[in-house]
Image 1 (cartoon, rainbow, N blue to C red):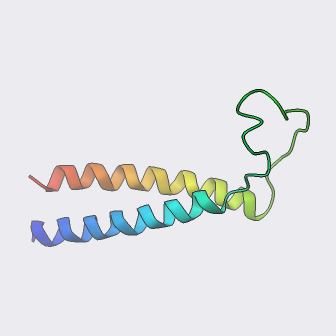
Image 2: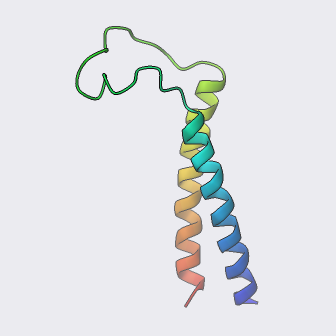
Image 3: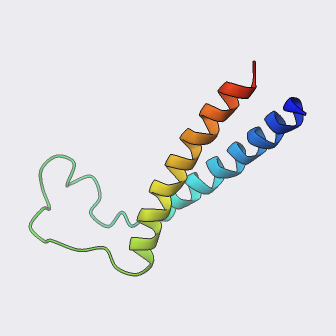
Length: 77
């Protein structure tokens, strides 16, 4: 039974990783690398609509991935 649970957790972890990569790639990168080096910060923008959803969805997926990883660690032994 524990082996089946571990397999389900590992498959879930793979699915969450794929969704996380897609979510990160879909995020708006209009600012480019200029803001990383201190430029381009003149305009303040708030996240709205799909951009806001993707932002919170990405945070949710990261937390879910950490929880799944800890559960795999607990049941893998």
